[in-house]
Figure 1 (cartoon, rainbow, N blue to C red):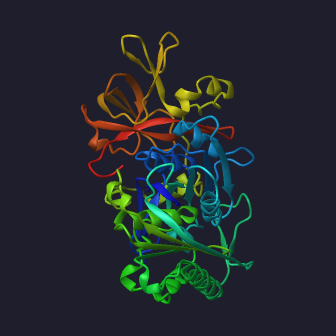
Figure 2: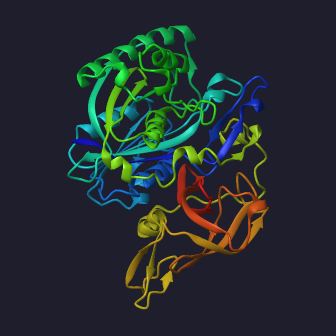
Figure 3: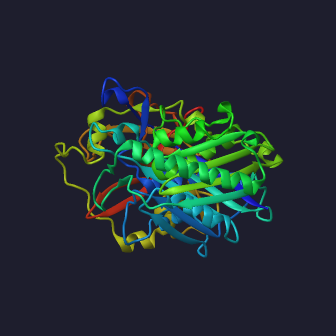
Length: 456
């Protein structure tokens, strides 16, 4: 039996009130911070997916339509931050929204545990519908068999149809998609979605009334809603697309909405995922009794209860749509490739060291005898400073000295924090972020952020 061994979903802390784009709009969309990209968000989701499973991935697939790098593989940074084994293969599937479900199909037909990470930032032209409807986020699914660990949802059936037609497109280097007339795409996608759903249910020998949760994802919202409404599945079983709270996170949306369905599912429930992107793909899952013993450490729906408002002009600046006055300080230098390789475990895996007496050193000391994994440890703020002069695309910069549980002290930058909530004694956890980009090199490292009662 092959299926889902674990899942994780991540929605960034930023929220843009759509009324700042146009007064007639409503709801919010998620906004990745200036120090986040598809790689860092993918790491956040994957850490949650791996937190409660004994399975060790044999392969990693990273899917996004907004890759931080071309030519070089983005999945290797995710692999390094997760501290996966050297023999775990890591590959990208980038450039199209459909690549995410493509990696899922690959994982379902592969041998060994396979980690599928989908992450995306969606940006439209200022004031356009894609900007308002878009969202940022990531989700991860660990696929394997019952010999790898408890299967939480078994794969029952899959079906795919492919069609070549022009609904949306984006030339490499352009910041936003161009769209064809909306009714054309709706007509084509509705037929494709119905066909894939019908084929998958027939293969599973199920009727629409047997479906306990129906997820329909896709950038064409009207088509997705039409497929759900005409599917024959009871309306109460259709999963909320979270359009009004998250927006559409593109390649990440299928796995993100599937995660939301799994969080609320009971054992023995049939969940169907339909994805509309350059065709249609349908996946039929049945949850197992193991789901009952798998509480999600940071549920997606609880993450939505937290967030920080992001002003519209700030959002535009972070997305490169505005060119604001830069900080009057020297820009950071390009990260050293040789130094990054020498300090690989520290830079990407946040691994410290300990001496024979157990004293933890951060950064690791060459004199110590053992490595200490620190990324999952929480800590306490000993002191902090708010620096309004240091270089940052989003000043001020907040630095804190943190004492980690179990030992280790480190001065580290804070993120996702409001100055008003800073306090000595505050609790923090670690988050993989992009410190800066210089000469086309993204300098990744770890920052600390406040531990919130229910959020991430």
